[in-house]
Image 1 (cartoon, rainbow, N blue to C red):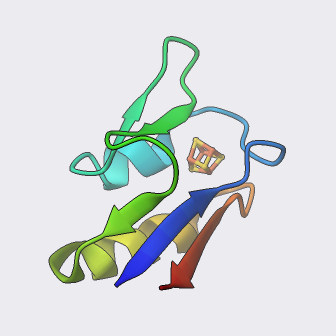
Image 2 (image 1 turned 90 degrees about the horizontal axis):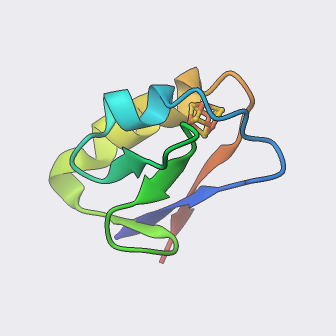
Image 3 (image 1 turned 90 degrees about the vertical axis):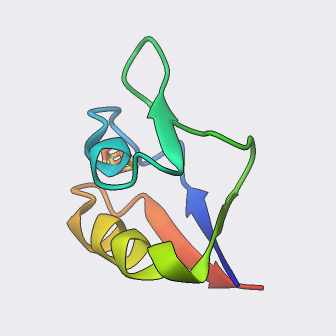
Length: 68
Ligand code: SF4
C-alpha cells in the first residue's frame, strides 16, 4: 500500500491532480486538492498507476507517494 502526500506549501491549487485521480481527490472551493478520505490519501493497488501519473504531472512537484 502507498499513500499520496500533498505538500500544501508547494501546491498552487489548479486541481490537475484531482482531475487525474477523481476517485481519491476532490478540490476545495479555491481549487486545492483534498483527500476524499481526509489527511494523506491511501492509494489502492488498482489506482497506483494513476497516482504515479498525477505525481509526475504535478507542475509544482507537490505530490509524493510513500510506501506504508
Ligand atoms: S497538481 Fe500539484 S500543484 Fe496542482 S493542485 Fe495538484 S498538488 Fe497542487
